[in-house]
Structure formats: structure tokens, C-alpha cells
Image 1 (cartoon, one colour):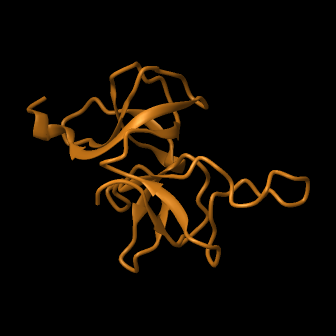
Image 2 (cartoon, rainbow, N blue to C red):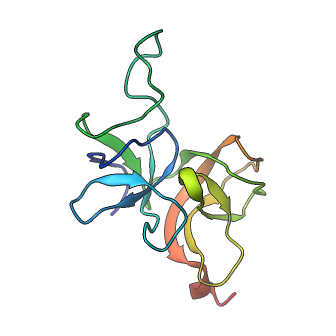
Amino acid sequence: MFGSFSKLCGGNVRPARIISLQTDGTVIECDGTVATPPWGISQPSVRRMALAGWDDGFAGIVGSPPINVFGPGDDEAKLVLGGTVNPGQYIKAAAGGVGVAATTAGDMVIAQAHREGGNSGDVIEVKPMRFDIGALGE
């Protein structure tokens, strides 16, 4: 995978969340477990216009058109944080597809914080990537 691509959703996927690829080729939000390894980051926008009665808060759902997915090869993507992340720090998935600091050998890294850090609930720019933090010898 090099750069952005499109995928159908196998469940409800919110904007700017870490997603996992399923065996049927669809994507779902990561839950931070080994069962749903991180594979990319969902588009930063909702699937419908942000008008009263239209916007359901999802980037994609089952049966909707494909969503844009950011991955290794992309320069940046927006990501919702689930904890404190410092600039330059590696990020892994947590429940709900949010990003948290990757600090332990074996953590599956999906991104690196770009020029900014943030706290839980913040949306920051990240550099998509994918590797096991143990591969760095940390």
C-alpha cells in the first residue's frame, strides 16, 4: 500500500480514526487489540453534508460508498487522539480507533505525530506509517 486508496466499510467508521482491514476487504475501526491490527487512517470528513438531519457523524457505514483511507506513502492525515501525544512521538491504536502514544516493544505503530502534539479528543496531523515498534530495537 502506497498512499491513499478507497475501501468499503464493514461497520460504522468515524472520521480521522485508525482502521483495520478485514478478510473480506472491508475496513472497520481498530479497537486496539491484536484482533484488529492497524492498517490505515480514515478520511477526515463525514460521508454526508453537515446539515441538520443529514450528518450522522460517520465517514462511512456498511452499504455506503467507499471511504478514503490514508496509509504509508501519504505525507499526512488527520487523527483523533485518545491520550496525550507529543510532537514526533509514534502512535498506536486504542479502543474506538483513536491514537495514543506507542511506547512498548511490540506496539503496532500506525503514525507519527507531525509538527504538533495533543491530548485526548484533539485532532492532529500525523505521518501515516505501519511497523512494529520492536523493529526499532526499543
